[in-house]
Image (cartoon, rainbow, N blue to C red; front, side, top):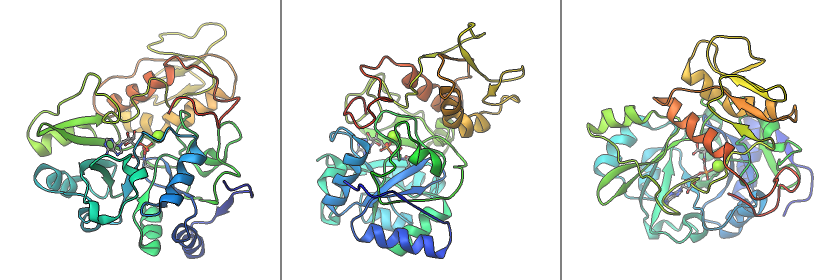
Length: 332
Ligand code: TXA
Ligand code: MG
């Protein structure tokens, strides 16, 4: 575990080279992607990957996504054929993760896949993430850069944030400003040959269905580890969260959606992309007021599916208050 203060690297050639050198040396570095900040390590270096789990306090049965600079590199790690190849063509680089058969000869540490014979692959679109991957020349295992169970970070400051942040637990964070998408990638896997939505995210499920020209299977509750983030409490603020709220109670902070005066509003114009981009920042800001949070209804189509997924996990009951003990191995 790193106990020195975490370096903040600037988004310039020097910062990129520094991040890449730390990564090829087996260190853990937080990087911006278009979805959320990721906590990166060389996916072939078991010790480096172990440092990621340690910094996050993450249960080791939850596998990590491997990030590559392009589809050709991804095809060296997993089998990308048929429907997976069509989705890779349509959506990479971008916020889509494909869970495909692992190529064992690729040398990915078994801690990354949690010993499964499948692997989650993603080619991110963010120029800084891509530049670091090119410079480091290694596949990067990269979960979201938050302590396990807490709100995903969409700015460098969130990665370091005192409440549940990673300051002093990781070597560096590369500061690339705010993430444009603001929600994690959509995850698609294949169950008995059927393309399945394992996690709604930054690519609309409807857009995936259009490319495949068929409906996605949507597991009611697929068991771990097929079901990313399916542990009940996830993305959780310290405060209690009430959903589908028309109004806030006297002690509550309201997060609105659509026209109307609320101090916090995901999108006054009902734009789901804007709401997705603001979701985690707004939860953090409302949480700082220290009162229970009430969230207005958000439609369940398009990106609203992913927004509602994150909100219901944030509202789920949790056994401990992770704000008081961010390193405790609680919910993932
Ligand atoms: O947008 C994103 O996907 C971000 C950025 C940093 O790329 N990453 C991210 O990673 O959200 P993470 O670790 O927080 O979520 C990855 C999810 C996990 O819940 C895990 O269960 C699932 O991906 N996953 C990874 N490999 C898998 C596999 N072989 N089979 C099933 N699920 C897998
Ligand atoms: Mg996460």
